[in-house]
Image (cartoon, rainbow, N blue to C red):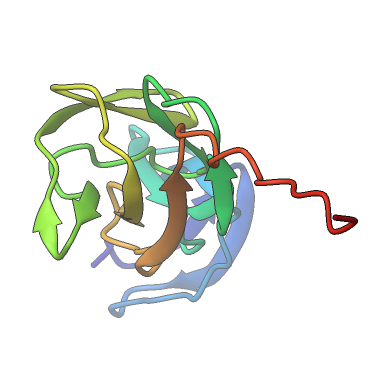
Length: 171
């Protein structure tokens, strides 16, 4: 609402002509933080005290860019951890609601996930045994947008194959 005979200015630009009725406008905001200064201005050019309105726009979901070890990898050395790189340029990763889990034979592998800007590292509580693993990760940002669940598999195989048997066929 506004007083009779006042115009509405946003960031020093008139957006509603002088009048006295309720008003509304549509405004496009850029990604990230925005601040709007809203004022009423009377016919004499006198400005009201400004009302500062702060917005944070985040309409882009986080993107999982890299998982290490890579999907389909065969590892001759047991990894100490699994690392996921996340591109989140908006509100930031919500570490409480994001999920990182490592699975073997359909059972979760115990471990701890630690988050840093653009990176999450899952460290298993014990050394990984030989076999197939599946990593499942979902990054959720503070605006509630999800990367979707991404899955990646790898195999730990540190046992060398048995040496071949060579025989002399000339007897």
